[in-house]
Amino acid sequence: MSRWDIDQALVAVSDEARELEAVRQQVLAERAAGKQKLLFVFGGALVVALGFLTGSGSPLGLLAGLPVALIGGAIVHHVYFAKGAARYQAMFKRQFVSRVVKAIEPGMNYEPDQGISEQLFSQSGLFSSRPDRYSCEDLFHGRIGETEVMFSEVHAEDRRTRRDSKGNTETYYVTIFKGILFIADFHKDFRSPVSVMPDIAERHLGWIGKKLQKLGGNLQKLENPEFEQMYVVRGEDPVEARYILTPSMQEQLVELGKRVGDGLKVVFRDSQVCLAIPNKEDWFEGDLHKPAGDRQQAAKLMSELKSCFMIVDELDLNTRIWTKD
Amino acid sequence: MKGLLIALGVLVSVVILYYNGFVSRRNAMRNAFASIDVQLKKRWDLIPNLVETVKGFAKHEREVMESVIAARHAPAGSKERFDCEEQIAAQAGRLLAVAESYPELKSNEQFLLLQRNLTEVESQISASRRAYNAAVTAWNEGVEAFPGVLFARVFKFERADWFEVRSEERGNVEVSL
Image 1: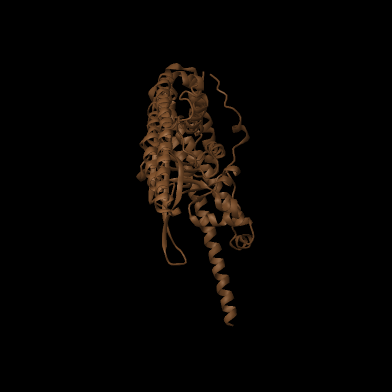
Image 2: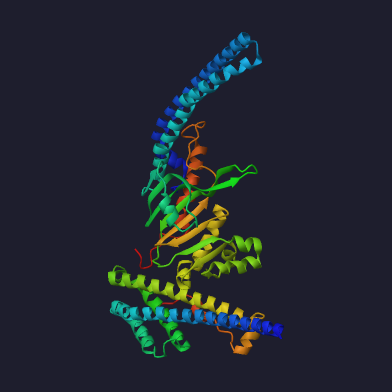
């Protein structure tokens, strides 16, 4: 039976699912009580508003109920809704996801509150600018077969300012990258970095884009036409670039690019391979409105995990026939 | 007169640019060719150790290998030398395949290390050849495309040949014991 079998994984985590379900029921009960409290708060706010309305005779008296509704509503939301949801989410990740990960890949560890550091993000060479705002979560690290791996969700943003017609400046943030940052030990030794970036220039500008690519320097043209259409490769040493990007590695990156969608970036450096896989969704999260052992929820989690874990096989990183151990 | 001088200046600049472009492409090609030779030398250094290790296990293969080594007399960097290296590569592959029939050899650490080293060198040779072919493609594009073809004729630059795998090397290696 495959290690990605959902039913098998659900059996492995049945104890955790039972415990988690009890917590979920408790949180749902708290939310039901919270709804009653909210009705009570809004009712109180209405009474206050009507009191002020009849007392002052002005319709503005109705506004007096607003602070009561807002403050009371915020307190009830925090105590009965947000706290419980956060408690369930933390437990879902710490117990359920961790256990599923161990059942699928015993060599891997999961730390929901950790992530790949900003320093590693900047050192990866995947992005040209350092982020001004950076957050990360859901760190997976360990060994898949022979290969050391770590990946996490990352959100990196750049700070920008703009000035309106009245001369007021406004600060806003632009996303540099949101998705999965994946770093794995590469099975070959090499000296100079090689980058494989989406070929935006050629795709949008055609022949002119192709010429413009050369301006960036160290351009390496490889043999696979489909690969060349998807990516632009740069590396100081043409032999080393081809040593890393063998014809089969080019095929594998084409297939991976098709699977994860547009925007896949890959850098080979310091004997590692770093991948930036864009993803707008929040992965590895539990749904409070579904039973803990729900098959659909487990299938979604497994598919998210598989999408990351299988990169090792897709890039054939466990093949250790070269001199690097 | 001034216009003529400007036109002449532009023409000289274009000629210089094209000539330098050709020189840089030719150097890239020569550099790639030299890197193949470096890797072939690495492989060559591994062969005596491989022959020594399999001695006693695969007598017939060892004799074949020794005869190929004896034939390796062509000067470095020459086409004949590369042809000879092709034979060595095929024989080295056969020797490694022999290991499949000898469990003692498969567990021999020295042999396993040599096997990994040979795989490494073969990958590097393959990468060097591909880099050479890419450099040849860039050179040939310069020599054949317009207006480069006009300058190439003036400077007597000719198209270069790619490395191609001989048809007999495309087949599977047969091991006879």
